[in-house]
Length: 320
Image 1 (cartoon, rainbow, N blue to C red):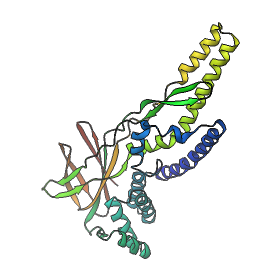
Image 2 (image 1 turned 180 degrees about the horizontal axis):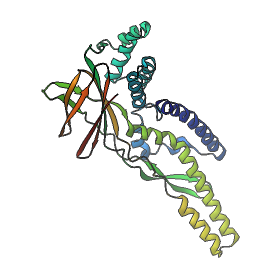
Image 3 (image 1 turned 60 degrees about the horizontal axis):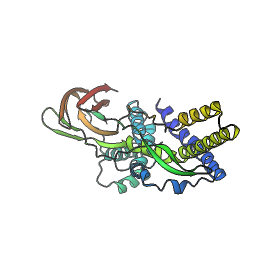
């Protein structure tokens, strides 16, 4: 499943480029000035969100999770490849930096280790101790906001200035709090750090899709104009022609607001080595606190999956 997820990210990027190329050809054929349309200030909120990420397809969280599973199953080379890919997408995450340095040293990747040591001089590459296991915390919080509708005036041949309905994300990017993790004896283990902002990725996808969405919307508006004009020319009293034209206008006028509303707003990670045995973690988030018993086994990975909903914190553990 991890390999499938990684392959999908690549194939979607290739397929998307084909759609963009077709939309650009349609723009040229129908003389649609995309640059002039997208200058409207109503696009600014989506643009600001989209600028927070570099790609709508490449997800560091997916690669990191793949690396965790590969490493837990003893496939260190595959884990190293995925950690490096995740780091290239989200280079500021300290846990990704640690993993790449640690495995580069473990696998004898001397040139890589020298390079990353220079890039991250303050990051430790220390491996787990003889009686230690790895604890990985995956933290997902809240939900991506729903799309909203906006109306943009666009010049249409034979119709003049026509308002076109388009989807948008009107909310500004909000800072997301971290999950604080302690142990029952009061020791602070650390806090989670963001590895993907899915709200920003959704905005990136919408921003880049505007070329396709606007092209289709303009072509629909031109088709409406042709239908209305044709119906009127054929018979101004033709009720059937007028009805068909009005039905087409109603069916195609609203923007497509469908989206994945159950995806988390963002995902964060934390990764530490702990002594083997039964441990109790204290999870603190936004005023909510929860005690979570976990089993740590030497040489193995304990996965802690924490999800925060408004006013609620849930957690599950898995020994890999």
